[in-house]
Structures are given as C-alpha cells and as structure tokens.
Image (tube, rainbow, N blue to C red; front, side, top):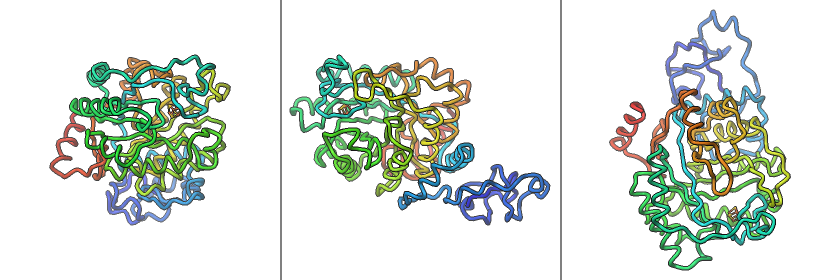
Length: 407
Ligand code: SF4
C-alpha cells in the first residue's frame, strides 16, 4: 500500500518502498509506519483510507481483473488522489496536449458500430451523406491551421472498414498526407480501420506517429456494439501497429449502456496488452440522432473521471486523453479530469461529425487552471519512450525537457 508522509523529510530516501525510486516524497498523508514523518502532523491526521492495497506507480501489464475492479471501485476522492499521485510520478501535471481531429473521409462506412453516425447501416435515419476522401492540399491546410493555433497532434479519421476496401490511389493519398503533415513537426495519428501488417509498415515508413484503434468496451459487451467485426480483429490490428513500430492509441467509449464491469473489462484489456498503449482516449458517448444508441443518456462527468483515474493508475505513463463528449462538462468537471490524470484534449469545434468545445473556451480554461500546452513528442517525465513510440536518447530528451521548462 502506498502511504506518503506529509512534509516528508526523507526527500527520496523513503523506506516505504514504492516511492523511493520514483520521486521525492512531497505529498500529503502520513504513514503510521514512516519514522521520518513530522510527528506533530501525524498526531493530527486520521489513518490513510485502507482501500488502496493495489500498488501505485508500478508499470505492470499483469493486472488482474480483480485488481482493476478494486482500483475502479475506490471511493472517488481517494481514487482521484491516488491517480493524481501516480500522474506526478511520470508526467508534468500542468502539461495538457491539444490535438486536432479531422474526418478526411466521412460517412458510407460498411461497419455497424451502433454509436456511430457514419455507418451506412443507419444512413437513412441519420441523413449523413457519404463524402469522398479529401484532397491532400485541403487536409494539409487544415493541419497548418491546427499547428498555428497550438495543436501539436493531428489525427485523421476515415470511415472505412480498412484501407483494403479502397484503391491504391486513395491509399497513396493517405500516405502522402501522413508524410506532408509529419513534415510540419506535429505528431500524426490516423484512424483508418483494420490494418494488415504490410499497411501498418507503409504507414510507419510514411512517418506516422500513432495509430488509433479503440477497443470501445469490454470483450463481453462488444457484440452489443457492433456485429461486423470481432474483438480479436481489433487486437490483431493493434498487434500489427505495435510490430510496425508505430505508437499505439487505444481507448474506449463510456455510456453505451455498458455496466461498470464492462468499463473495468475495457481498462483491464488495455492495461494488459503486451505494452501499454502510449495513448488512451476516454470518450463519453455523444448520442447521435438516428443511430441505435440515440436515446442513451450521456455518462456523468464523475463516471468519466472515475475511468480516467483508473486508466492513469493502471497505465501510469500513457497519455490519457479526455476525448469526445466533454461539451457539457463544466470547467470544474474538466479540472477534476486533469487532476485525475487526463493530459490531452481535442480542440476545435468538431470531432469527426459531432460538436466539440470552442477553442477559445479551452484556451480560457487553460489560463484559469494554469495549464500549459504539451509540446509534440514530449518524452515521459520519468524518461523512456516518447509519444513517437521510440526511446529517446538523453541528448534528444534534454532539449525537449528544456522546452517544457520554458513553456
Ligand atoms: S466507428 Fe469507424 S468503423 Fe465504426 S461505423 Fe463509424 S466510421 Fe465505421
């Protein structure tokens, strides 16, 4: 169990174990067994709550479902406190990345995701018209605008089952988009459906930073969400992405009628992949009229905060992205999301086909909360892989760390 001494005097020589190697102890509650704690303070505090017997701060891919359940079920404020503690071990908590998501090919998708307005299966009900793949120049110009407004990651989504369904000309155009935008110094992410190992390799060669492929929900609930593919298909694509040397972006959607145990199941799957995804988007369902999930009540901000905190504790180094569905969240809701370990948002007033928060409002929120925009390719504060998926050498990491300090 993690117990941290208030005003701890050990400054890193903590004998409690978990924190000793990770960070100087500078946090709140006193451990009854910590002989370095200020005696006067420990006299005045009650014992730390006892529900957190899971280890905090360890990078593990062997989480059991019971352990993830235990994390998820922790009383909310204690959970947020624990997640905030872990967040500070690996990340600068003031750094939040601003990302832009563009739909480069909208509608007409042959898949049957019940939450999605772009499936051709409910085209008549949603009234969404299928569009062609955007031109290279139009996408490039959108990326330049995003970069100039402070976005450091540009994500492109195509409503495809996968690149295998389209001709070589369209595929080459997507590869050209990746190369051109990578040249802007931004992280480049795509979400294009199922990939073969060869397609993943081509994306990597084009300079792709990350590939998004959400697991959406638990394996048990997945058949309620789509009938046109299996959970194993998702895992196979993630495997191809990882093997190609591309950074993995995989998360899910909360509020699709799933039970708490499905949320735990999703987070357990992500936290027990052979390596944690570098990027974990947590989306709140945006129920679109005409889709099978149109009448689903939105999840509460507290539901999302609980999922973010659980993701942060089980995948300490990942960038946890507060993604779709925050339009109705108050600034205080979002502040708790960041406290719980979220370190990315999508900015811009549209996410694929659904509305999103205005950029100016987000900039005001950053100002109010004292947040800073996270630069592209920022390595984890504790060292190790950058969001490019590649390990940085110290001489590469140093200028980035200096940029962060100066930001
Ligand atoms: S979520 Fe993606 S794969 Fe599913 S229907 Fe929508 S565009 Fe197609």
